Length: 194
Image (cartoon, rainbow, N blue to C red):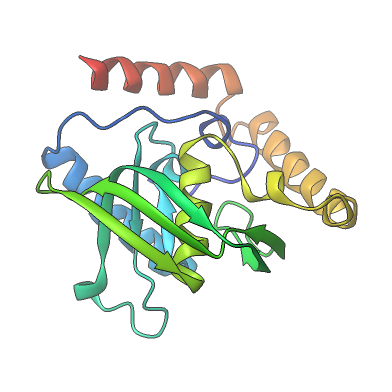
């Protein structure tokens, strides 16, 4: 398992709902936390590790990465949002790229935990931004889709460089072709849907 970079097809497709929590999902969650910490992140969506499932992990404790603050959210949806704020944002699937992104100032999210309990979370500040960023991932959107026109123009070269490196890795055989990636994702979806 590894964090995939743009324009990996898993990042650009909406995820499917998780139907059951099993040993495999719990193992994936553990691996995802390790990857997220290694990359210096605070949140990671399943499709950022090429899993087509609707779940995210988070640990907003940026100081210590306290395991007691690790959270897993299954099938999250934003049910309300208020206000608007612009702040700098980055993404583990775009390492090194940072830009201002406008997001809601406050969100309310509904999701399930690993025990199947429904949670209702009200988030502001960094947590609100992380929720919106990760749920965008689950919907097949990446943070550059939220850039203002000026930001898109300013970072056009950076985005093209991510695309160039990805295609080069495919050409050199370090990454599978898009058609093979999409086939793998499709097989994972079929297995999950039973």
